[in-house]
Length: 201
Image (cartoon, rainbow, N blue to C red; front, top):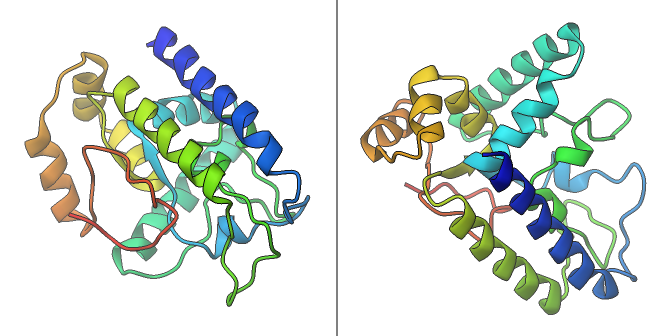
């Protein structure tokens, strides 16, 4: 699993290097968090969920408790099809897991300042590079699933699911039952338009 985490970081790094020339005109800046609060859900792979869990595990106990509460609240809002800011977005509009943020966050930037009327505007080149990186993520995490981060993290907190995943096994019936219970879509593969708020079964 540690080898896979290293490979995941390489996918991130390769994307950043290839996309850098197209991001020079980005309107994003410090404190800009539209994508974290208004642009939709944040789909992650199971492997990315493990990396995020590692990051949470080294935080102070009080911060871990507050994150658990924020993730639970996020799940409830999304089960009701309501908008919900990222549970890792702090009051100062900074990301508390920035170094471990998933690819859904890494690939998004905008050539124009975002608003409720102007969602992120990406160049075609970066979108194509993102799609290529997503295919690499799917090949790497071939026994995992994708879905909104709060649900994937919840699944990883379930020993039965975690043990099956760490053993490299694939039991879709349990994942389907989880999805139906929580009125959500859990996918076998990561979908390229993961910043969109539409649900899938």
